[in-house]
Length: 371
Image 1 (cartoon, rainbow, N blue to C red):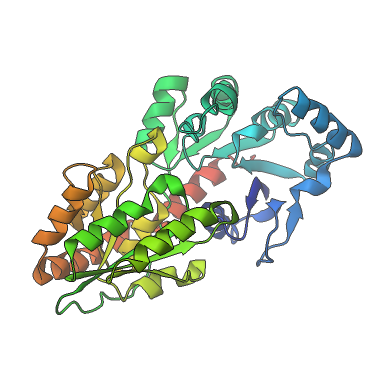
Image 2: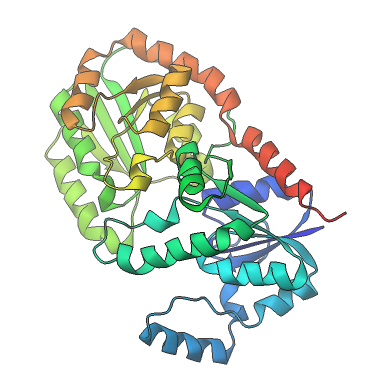
Protein backbone atom coordinates (compact mmCIF):
# COMPACT_ATOMS: atom_id res chain seq x y z
CA UNK A 1 0.00 0.00 0.00
CA UNK A 2 1.23 3.47 -0.88
CA UNK A 3 0.96 6.35 1.57
CA UNK A 4 1.70 9.90 0.48
CA UNK A 5 2.94 12.71 2.72
CA UNK A 6 2.43 16.27 1.50
CA UNK A 7 3.92 19.36 3.12
CA UNK A 8 5.33 22.78 2.33
CA UNK A 9 8.02 22.21 4.97
CA UNK A 10 11.55 20.99 4.46
CA UNK A 11 10.88 17.31 5.01
CA UNK A 12 14.43 16.48 6.03
CA UNK A 13 14.51 18.96 8.89
CA UNK A 14 10.92 19.01 10.20
CA UNK A 15 11.00 16.81 13.35
CA UNK A 16 7.31 15.88 13.22
CA UNK A 17 7.58 14.71 9.61
CA UNK A 18 10.85 12.88 10.28
CA UNK A 19 9.17 10.86 13.04
CA UNK A 20 6.13 10.24 10.85
CA UNK A 21 8.33 8.84 8.08
CA UNK A 22 10.21 6.72 10.60
CA UNK A 23 6.95 5.21 11.86
CA UNK A 24 5.73 4.27 8.39
CA UNK A 25 8.78 3.44 6.27
CA UNK A 26 9.00 -0.27 7.14
CA UNK A 27 5.29 -0.93 6.76
CA UNK A 28 4.08 0.95 3.67
CA UNK A 29 5.51 2.37 0.47
CA UNK A 30 6.03 6.09 1.00
CA UNK A 31 5.68 8.85 -1.58
CA UNK A 32 6.96 12.18 -0.26
CA UNK A 33 5.84 15.45 -1.82
CA UNK A 34 7.18 18.65 -0.37
CA UNK A 35 10.15 20.94 -0.01
CA UNK A 36 13.19 18.68 -0.50
CA UNK A 37 15.78 20.87 1.20
CA UNK A 38 18.88 18.77 1.84
CA UNK A 39 18.93 15.20 0.56
CA UNK A 40 17.65 12.52 2.91
CA UNK A 41 17.10 8.78 2.97
CA UNK A 42 13.90 9.02 0.89
CA UNK A 43 13.44 10.76 -2.47
CA UNK A 44 11.20 13.81 -2.25
CA UNK A 45 9.12 15.08 -5.15
CA UNK A 46 9.23 18.86 -5.12
CA UNK A 47 5.78 20.26 -4.48
CA UNK A 48 6.60 23.15 -6.80
CA UNK A 49 7.16 20.83 -9.76
CA UNK A 50 3.41 20.20 -9.88
CA UNK A 51 2.56 23.82 -10.68
CA UNK A 52 1.50 24.58 -14.25
CA UNK A 53 1.97 27.90 -16.02
CA UNK A 54 -1.72 28.48 -15.48
CA UNK A 55 -1.27 27.87 -11.73
CA UNK A 56 1.45 30.49 -11.58
CA UNK A 57 -0.56 33.08 -13.49
CA UNK A 58 -3.68 32.39 -11.44
CA UNK A 59 -1.69 32.64 -8.22
CA UNK A 60 -0.51 36.11 -9.19
CA UNK A 61 -4.10 37.18 -9.78
CA UNK A 62 -5.18 35.52 -6.52
CA UNK A 63 -2.46 37.40 -4.66
CA UNK A 64 -3.82 40.71 -5.93
CA UNK A 65 -7.27 39.63 -4.82
CA UNK A 66 -5.82 38.47 -1.49
CA UNK A 67 -6.94 34.88 -2.06
CA UNK A 68 -4.85 32.13 -0.49
CA UNK A 69 -5.71 28.87 -2.23
CA UNK A 70 -2.74 26.69 -3.17
CA UNK A 71 -2.77 25.57 -6.80
CA UNK A 72 -0.88 22.52 -8.08
CA UNK A 73 -2.59 21.54 -11.30
CA UNK A 74 -0.53 18.38 -11.96
CA UNK A 75 -0.65 16.98 -8.44
CA UNK A 76 -3.95 15.08 -8.65
CA UNK A 77 -2.81 13.24 -11.78
CA UNK A 78 0.46 12.26 -10.11
CA UNK A 79 -1.31 10.95 -7.00
CA UNK A 80 -3.65 8.81 -9.12
CA UNK A 81 -0.78 7.51 -11.26
CA UNK A 82 1.09 6.51 -8.12
CA UNK A 83 -2.00 4.71 -6.79
CA UNK A 84 -1.66 6.42 -3.40
CA UNK A 85 -4.47 5.26 -1.12
CA UNK A 86 -3.80 7.37 1.98
CA UNK A 87 -2.58 10.98 1.97
CA UNK A 88 -1.20 12.78 5.00
CA UNK A 89 -1.24 16.59 4.97
CA UNK A 90 0.59 19.01 7.26
CA UNK A 91 -0.87 22.41 6.34
CA UNK A 92 -4.50 23.57 6.36
CA UNK A 93 -4.03 25.33 3.00
CA UNK A 94 -4.32 21.88 1.40
CA UNK A 95 -7.77 21.15 2.89
CA UNK A 96 -9.88 21.92 -0.24
CA UNK A 97 -7.53 19.84 -2.38
CA UNK A 98 -7.52 16.95 0.11
CA UNK A 99 -11.29 16.80 0.47
CA UNK A 100 -11.73 16.99 -3.30
CA UNK A 101 -9.47 13.95 -3.70
CA UNK A 102 -11.46 12.06 -1.11
CA UNK A 103 -14.80 12.79 -2.73
CA UNK A 104 -13.70 12.11 -6.30
CA UNK A 105 -11.32 9.19 -5.82
CA UNK A 106 -12.08 7.76 -2.35
CA UNK A 107 -8.58 8.42 -1.13
CA UNK A 108 -8.30 8.44 2.67
CA UNK A 109 -7.02 11.76 4.04
CA UNK A 110 -5.15 12.54 7.26
CA UNK A 111 -4.31 15.90 8.81
CA UNK A 112 -1.28 15.94 11.12
CA UNK A 113 -1.39 19.40 12.72
CA UNK A 114 1.77 21.00 14.10
CA UNK A 115 -0.18 23.45 16.28
CA UNK A 116 -3.57 25.17 16.49
CA UNK A 117 -3.39 26.88 13.11
CA UNK A 118 -6.37 29.29 13.42
CA UNK A 119 -4.35 31.15 16.08
CA UNK A 120 -0.87 30.44 14.72
CA UNK A 121 0.27 34.10 14.55
CA UNK A 122 -2.51 35.75 16.51
CA UNK A 123 -0.05 38.24 18.02
CA UNK A 124 0.93 39.64 14.59
CA UNK A 125 -1.10 42.76 13.71
CA UNK A 126 -3.64 42.05 11.00
CA UNK A 127 -3.01 38.30 10.92
CA UNK A 128 -6.16 37.20 12.84
CA UNK A 129 -8.41 39.15 10.45
CA UNK A 130 -6.73 37.74 7.33
CA UNK A 131 -4.96 34.39 7.37
CA UNK A 132 -6.28 33.57 10.82
CA UNK A 133 -9.85 33.95 9.57
CA UNK A 134 -8.94 31.90 6.50
CA UNK A 135 -7.58 29.05 8.63
CA UNK A 136 -10.62 29.21 10.90
CA UNK A 137 -12.92 28.88 7.89
CA UNK A 138 -10.86 25.96 6.58
CA UNK A 139 -11.09 24.17 9.93
CA UNK A 140 -14.83 24.78 10.14
CA UNK A 141 -15.64 23.74 6.58
CA UNK A 142 -13.24 20.86 5.95
CA UNK A 143 -11.87 19.38 9.16
CA UNK A 144 -14.75 16.96 9.71
CA UNK A 145 -14.12 15.37 6.31
CA UNK A 146 -10.72 13.97 7.30
CA UNK A 147 -10.48 10.25 8.07
CA UNK A 148 -7.90 10.90 10.78
CA UNK A 149 -7.04 14.12 12.60
CA UNK A 150 -3.90 14.34 14.77
CA UNK A 151 -2.95 17.06 17.25
CA UNK A 152 0.18 17.67 19.31
CA UNK A 153 -1.40 17.95 22.76
CA UNK A 154 -4.61 17.43 24.71
CA UNK A 155 -5.36 21.15 25.08
CA UNK A 156 -5.46 21.64 21.31
CA UNK A 157 -7.50 18.47 20.88
CA UNK A 158 -10.12 19.86 23.28
CA UNK A 159 -10.06 23.27 21.56
CA UNK A 160 -10.81 21.67 18.18
CA UNK A 161 -13.54 19.53 19.70
CA UNK A 162 -15.15 22.58 21.26
CA UNK A 163 -14.82 24.95 18.30
CA UNK A 164 -15.27 22.60 15.35
CA UNK A 165 -16.96 19.49 16.84
CA UNK A 166 -14.16 17.31 15.47
CA UNK A 167 -12.19 14.94 17.66
CA UNK A 168 -8.59 13.89 17.11
CA UNK A 169 -5.87 11.69 18.52
CA UNK A 170 -2.88 13.19 20.33
CA UNK A 171 0.65 12.48 19.12
CA UNK A 172 3.06 14.86 20.87
CA UNK A 173 6.46 15.81 19.48
CA UNK A 174 8.28 13.23 21.56
CA UNK A 175 11.97 12.53 20.87
CA UNK A 176 13.33 9.09 20.03
CA UNK A 177 14.19 7.01 23.08
CA UNK A 178 17.76 7.28 24.30
CA UNK A 179 19.42 4.84 26.70
CA UNK A 180 21.95 7.46 27.70
CA UNK A 181 22.43 7.76 31.46
CA UNK A 182 22.23 10.99 33.50
CA UNK A 183 25.49 12.89 33.67
CA UNK A 184 27.06 13.48 37.08
CA UNK A 185 25.94 16.49 39.08
CA UNK A 186 28.37 16.89 41.93
CA UNK A 187 28.69 20.59 42.69
CA UNK A 188 27.73 24.10 41.75
CA UNK A 189 27.51 25.79 39.32
CA UNK A 190 24.42 24.07 37.95
CA UNK A 191 24.72 23.86 34.15
CA UNK A 192 21.53 24.95 32.37
CA UNK A 193 20.69 24.58 28.67
CA UNK A 194 18.05 26.11 26.42
CA UNK A 195 17.82 25.22 22.73
CA UNK A 196 15.47 25.86 19.85
CA UNK A 197 14.55 28.25 17.07
CA UNK A 198 15.47 31.93 17.03
CA UNK A 199 12.03 33.50 17.47
CA UNK A 200 11.62 36.92 19.14
CA UNK A 201 8.18 35.89 20.45
CA UNK A 202 9.84 33.36 22.75
CA UNK A 203 11.49 36.15 24.77
CA UNK A 204 14.78 34.33 25.15
CA UNK A 205 16.20 37.49 26.71
CA UNK A 206 14.15 36.75 29.83
CA UNK A 207 16.03 33.50 30.41
CA UNK A 208 19.28 35.44 30.14
CA UNK A 209 17.95 37.84 32.79
CA UNK A 210 16.90 34.94 35.05
CA UNK A 211 20.31 33.29 35.11
CA UNK A 212 22.14 36.59 35.40
CA UNK A 213 20.00 37.40 38.45
CA UNK A 214 20.49 33.91 39.95
CA UNK A 215 24.23 34.49 39.93
CA UNK A 216 27.40 32.47 39.60
CA UNK A 217 25.82 29.34 41.08
CA UNK A 218 24.40 28.77 37.58
CA UNK A 219 25.51 28.86 33.97
CA UNK A 220 23.28 28.93 30.91
CA UNK A 221 24.15 27.92 27.36
CA UNK A 222 21.66 29.00 24.71
CA UNK A 223 21.81 26.90 21.55
CA UNK A 224 19.63 28.53 18.92
CA UNK A 225 19.34 28.05 15.18
CA UNK A 226 20.03 31.39 13.45
CA UNK A 227 17.34 32.76 11.17
CA UNK A 228 17.94 35.30 8.41
CA UNK A 229 14.76 37.12 9.37
CA UNK A 230 15.78 37.50 13.00
CA UNK A 231 19.43 38.50 12.93
CA UNK A 232 18.72 41.75 14.75
CA UNK A 233 17.23 39.68 17.55
CA UNK A 234 20.27 37.40 17.54
CA UNK A 235 22.51 40.46 17.91
CA UNK A 236 20.40 41.65 20.84
CA UNK A 237 20.80 38.30 22.58
CA UNK A 238 24.52 38.27 21.84
CA UNK A 239 24.90 41.74 23.35
CA UNK A 240 22.95 40.71 26.47
CA UNK A 241 25.08 37.59 26.92
CA UNK A 242 28.27 39.63 26.60
CA UNK A 243 27.19 41.64 29.63
CA UNK A 244 27.01 38.52 31.80
CA UNK A 245 29.67 36.15 33.08
CA UNK A 246 27.47 33.05 33.18
CA UNK A 247 25.37 33.06 29.96
CA UNK A 248 26.58 32.42 26.42
CA UNK A 249 25.30 31.61 22.95
CA UNK A 250 26.65 28.40 21.45
CA UNK A 251 26.58 26.88 17.97
CA UNK A 252 23.67 24.52 17.20
CA UNK A 253 24.24 20.83 16.56
CA UNK A 254 22.45 18.58 14.09
CA UNK A 255 18.95 17.38 14.93
CA UNK A 256 20.02 13.82 15.78
CA UNK A 257 22.91 15.08 17.93
CA UNK A 258 20.83 17.23 20.28
CA UNK A 259 20.12 14.61 22.95
CA UNK A 260 23.68 13.28 23.35
CA UNK A 261 25.07 16.82 23.27
CA UNK A 262 22.83 18.29 25.96
CA UNK A 263 23.31 15.25 28.22
CA UNK A 264 26.38 17.05 29.64
CA UNK A 265 24.11 19.62 31.32
CA UNK A 266 22.16 19.39 34.57
CA UNK A 267 18.81 20.95 33.66
CA UNK A 268 16.86 22.28 30.71
CA UNK A 269 15.07 25.58 31.20
CA UNK A 270 12.17 27.13 29.31
CA UNK A 271 10.17 30.22 30.18
CA UNK A 272 7.47 30.76 27.55
CA UNK A 273 5.07 33.63 28.08
CA UNK A 274 1.37 32.90 27.43
CA UNK A 275 1.20 35.58 24.76
CA UNK A 276 -0.84 33.38 22.40
CA UNK A 277 -3.05 30.31 22.64
CA UNK A 278 -0.33 28.14 21.10
CA UNK A 279 2.34 29.48 23.45
CA UNK A 280 0.16 28.93 26.50
CA UNK A 281 -0.56 25.34 25.47
CA UNK A 282 2.87 24.53 24.06
CA UNK A 283 4.36 21.06 24.48
CA UNK A 284 7.52 21.55 22.41
CA UNK A 285 10.18 19.16 21.12
CA UNK A 286 12.76 20.50 23.54
CA UNK A 287 10.92 19.24 26.63
CA UNK A 288 11.06 15.68 25.32
CA UNK A 289 14.69 16.17 24.32
CA UNK A 290 15.45 17.31 27.88
CA UNK A 291 13.84 14.09 29.12
CA UNK A 292 15.74 11.82 26.73
CA UNK A 293 18.99 13.61 27.65
CA UNK A 294 18.16 12.81 31.31
CA UNK A 295 18.07 16.43 32.43
CA UNK A 296 16.03 17.98 35.19
CA UNK A 297 13.41 20.31 33.69
CA UNK A 298 12.51 23.85 34.77
CA UNK A 299 9.48 25.40 33.03
CA UNK A 300 6.92 28.16 33.22
CA UNK A 301 3.39 27.12 34.30
CA UNK A 302 2.16 26.27 30.79
CA UNK A 303 -0.43 23.52 31.41
CA UNK A 304 0.95 20.91 29.00
CA UNK A 305 4.57 21.28 30.09
CA UNK A 306 3.55 21.48 33.74
CA UNK A 307 1.59 18.25 33.52
CA UNK A 308 4.55 16.35 32.08
CA UNK A 309 7.02 17.70 34.63
CA UNK A 310 4.69 17.09 37.57
CA UNK A 311 3.49 13.62 36.55
CA UNK A 312 7.01 12.24 36.38
CA UNK A 313 8.53 14.48 39.09
CA UNK A 314 11.36 15.46 36.78
CA UNK A 315 11.69 19.12 37.70
CA UNK A 316 10.03 22.33 38.75
CA UNK A 317 7.16 24.51 37.54
CA UNK A 318 7.29 28.24 38.23
CA UNK A 319 4.46 29.78 40.24
CA UNK A 320 3.77 32.26 37.43
CA UNK A 321 5.26 33.52 34.20
CA UNK A 322 7.52 36.15 35.75
CA UNK A 323 11.30 36.02 35.77
CA UNK A 324 11.19 36.39 39.56
CA UNK A 325 9.39 33.05 39.89
CA UNK A 326 12.09 31.32 37.89
CA UNK A 327 14.84 32.97 39.93
CA UNK A 328 13.09 31.79 43.08
CA UNK A 329 13.17 28.20 41.84
CA UNK A 330 16.87 28.40 41.02
CA UNK A 331 17.75 29.90 44.39
CA UNK A 332 16.13 26.95 46.18
CA UNK A 333 17.77 24.17 44.16
CA UNK A 334 20.19 21.73 45.74
CA UNK A 335 22.54 19.26 44.13
CA UNK A 336 20.45 16.42 45.57
CA UNK A 337 17.27 17.90 44.03
CA UNK A 338 18.90 17.90 40.60
CA UNK A 339 20.14 14.33 40.97
CA UNK A 340 16.71 13.06 42.02
CA UNK A 341 14.94 14.68 39.07
CA UNK A 342 17.55 13.40 36.62
CA UNK A 343 17.05 9.87 37.95
CA UNK A 344 13.27 10.24 37.53
CA UNK A 345 13.74 10.98 33.83
CA UNK A 346 14.79 7.36 33.32
CA UNK A 347 11.18 6.25 33.79
CA UNK A 348 9.77 9.22 31.89
CA UNK A 349 12.04 8.56 28.90
CA UNK A 350 10.87 4.94 28.65
CA UNK A 351 7.25 6.10 28.28
CA UNK A 352 7.33 9.55 26.67
CA UNK A 353 9.24 8.66 23.54
CA UNK A 354 8.67 8.75 19.80
CA UNK A 355 8.68 4.98 19.47
CA UNK A 356 5.66 4.55 21.75
CA UNK A 357 3.69 7.28 20.01
CA UNK A 358 4.74 6.01 16.59
CA UNK A 359 3.12 2.66 17.37
CA UNK A 360 -0.16 4.46 18.05
CA UNK A 361 0.22 6.49 14.86
CA UNK A 362 1.01 3.41 12.74
CA UNK A 363 -1.98 1.49 14.09
CA UNK A 364 -4.28 4.38 13.22
CA UNK A 365 -2.89 4.69 9.68
CA UNK A 366 -3.15 0.94 9.02
CA UNK A 367 -6.80 0.93 10.08
CA UNK A 368 -7.45 3.25 7.12
CA UNK A 369 -5.98 0.78 4.63
CA UNK A 370 -8.50 -0.40 2.02
CA UNK A 371 -9.72 -3.98 2.35
